[in-house]
Image (tube, rainbow, N blue to C red; front, side, top):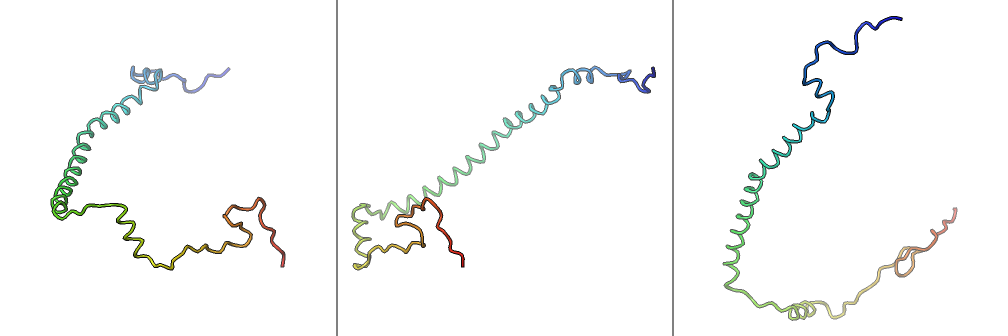
Length: 119
């Protein structure tokens, strides 16, 4: 029987290599800790960004509000409806478009596809 040239177990293994070989998931723990830590670290920067954006929007709204409150007209939906309906032509009526051949009146497709004639 012949012996292998190289042994499968190295002679000098460090304790870290033995622990990583025994518990391979330990290698991913620092990565997960960095990701979670960065998320909490970036939280203040993200919050500041949204606060500044909200501040810009609220400033514009306050300026617009000052200009609009002077000459504000009371809005009534019925009045708008009658105003818009009076502007339309009196002889206007809805017209249905023609349907493609083989399609029923209300657009429901037929149960079978139309038979194509060979020409």
